[in-house]
Length: 172
View 1 (cartoon, helix red, strand yellow):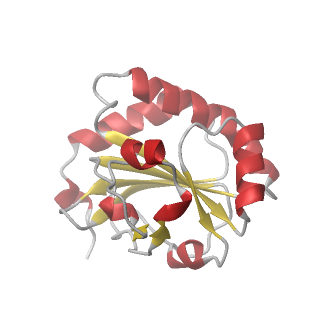
View 2: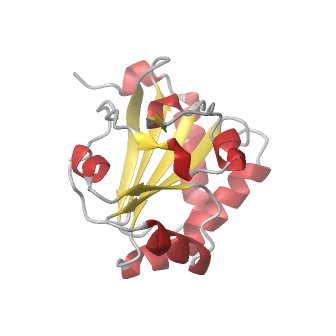
View 3: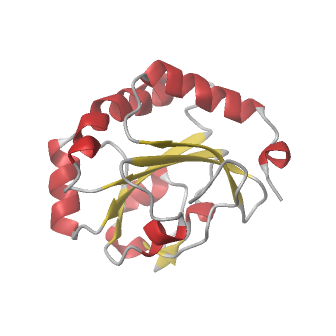
């Protein structure tokens, strides 16, 4: 499983399932696929979720609050991007989950578990916060398995990550 300091894996995600607005939010150009590392942001929050996971629904309000607060925070709004990864879901299942739980950010499909397996196949919900290490690579700054109880605490964590040099986070 991924740990803090690990490089985040580069797995292609289908770009054609995203709207132009979603691609703009992620700072991505048109194309057939992209990796998380291509998202232009200093910090990227990756939430692994599934429509079959009851805890994913329970964490949704806290994640939504943190996302909304990050968009309103001048220290975070232009430097942090969020993306969901629907593990094992079809597009219809992921869309229903996102609508029911008010997921405000783009959600990629991982129907074949490729990205989930690449991060070690953890239980979900699994939230990974990655920081840009180089133009093409991201380093895992923190991760959360299960519930996140405080959106304010999560926001503070992101601010601390932004202030930390990614080179000091990278393990061997």
